[in-house]
Length: 124
Image (cartoon, rainbow, N blue to C red):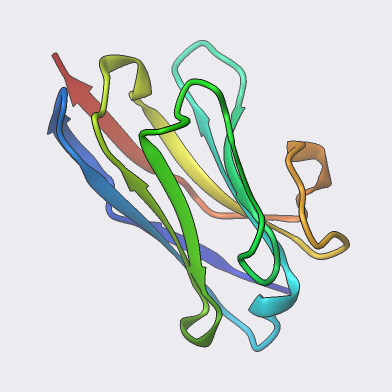
């Protein structure tokens, strides 16, 4: 069982930056593939970024590629999402997720545990 808690959300002007953190409970964080997803009002949850168990492999949605960076610190049981050059279209609730059966996962259906989400609002 893993519990995930996101932090770092808020309101930012377009062009600004934010860093999200996802703190995980338990001693097996390093065995989970991790990912970030987001959901805007009236839209389905969508993939943002994923990182492998060791951090050596990452993947990004085309909409955030070059602007967002996913990373993890297994010693601190924490994953991060550095978001730069934020756009109004990035406004959403952002969720972190953990997949126990995969070393790397992009599809949300492969994830077993989810955080409660943190709101990011980008003002234009």
